[in-house]
Image (cartoon, rainbow, N blue to C red; front, side):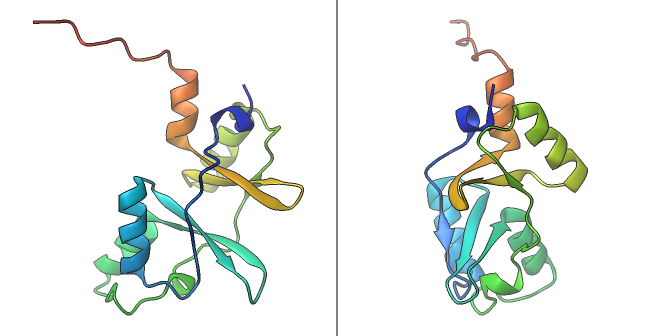
Length: 131
């Protein structure tokens, strides 16, 4: 199975000046653990994760004033849609992260998470037995 089969193509994107609270609110509403941060001025692509927000709050920083750009990972490892899920899982393991932005011809095509990979590798959950 390939990354394109597991990735989500509905991507939450935020700008670098979004506050962490704004990003967290959007992430919570979309039930996602990561947002792609697009910086139109630098042309850069980064990722802001729930862990980044948690770390900031844990340090006592104010989520209403902290901006996404200050907490965005910019040295992102990108996946290709043609990678195998094994390759994606290995990249995540080596890098110690749970999300990969998927690029197709230089454009953001999706995002794949550890949860997406597990969903593909495990058989569908059987319904709970009736009591």
